[in-house]
Amino acid sequence: MIDSNHWLLTLACPDRPGIVNGVTGAILAAQGNITELQQFTSTDSGQFFMRVQVQSGFDRSIFEEAVLPLAKELDAEWTIDYVGRRRRTLVLVSKEGHVLNDLLFRARSGYLPVNIPLIIGNHPDLGELASFYSVPFEHHVVTPETKADVEKRILNAVAEHDIELVVLARYMQILSPELCQALEGKAINIHHSFLPGFKGANPYRQAHERGVKLIGATAHFVTSALDEGPIIEQNVRRVDHTMDVPQLIAIGQEQETHTLTEAVKLFAEHRVLLDGQRTVVFR
Image (tube, rainbow, N blue to C red; front, side):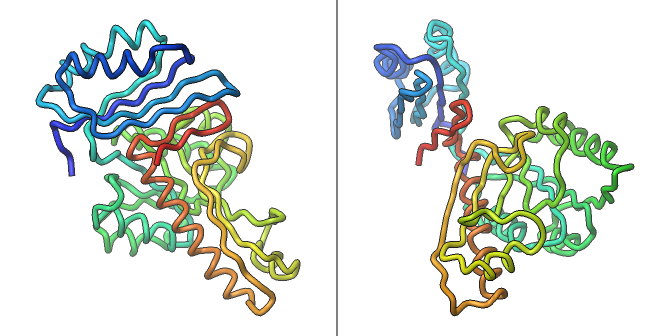
């Protein structure tokens, strides 16, 4: 639920003394009350990160006026938003519906603060599921000849719906470097990650044949380096030799579902900040 008197500030800048004092002082000057504050300094990059929630009676312009001079002085990247505002989200899918179903259910239930105005699939299989949740669905066949046109449609949809987040919910297509660049920092993918990492077809069968002891999933930002973007969330579950391939698939899908949903929630709540190839995640 959106509280128009409850604000959220994120800030990232080069580390230096006095940042926390400056931010809290600006909030105090605007007569705001801090309800949550998290901060982190990266010794690797020398960057400072902060997420603050502020309860107040002032409007956005007053908060911005209080923060702007300090942000300029710090050379900071910063955002201000309402706590609980639903982030506009485009979902890309193929045939597997377990991840999409969870996203749609949790968005409807209120657990995920996202609004999904459109789902785009390169197969028609999940159109019925989208219809069940009353979300428009578009089917576009992706071939070497149509790939550029489909990616253009994705970018047009981002612009049309003022999309803030693109979720690849088991979308089994490799995005072009150009699309990856256009969606930098606002596209999340889910990847089945094992130890070792199995590539190609039938990864769960490969895992069974190799006798893996852990099955996991990784949610990460999309980059042109396939499955190597900054990691947002990871989960694993222990398995053993008594489990057959269908059991491994079921466990893997459970991990994928939970991991992607949690990553989307963290992003939507402005809890994920980029630090180069790493992420800072405030929980």
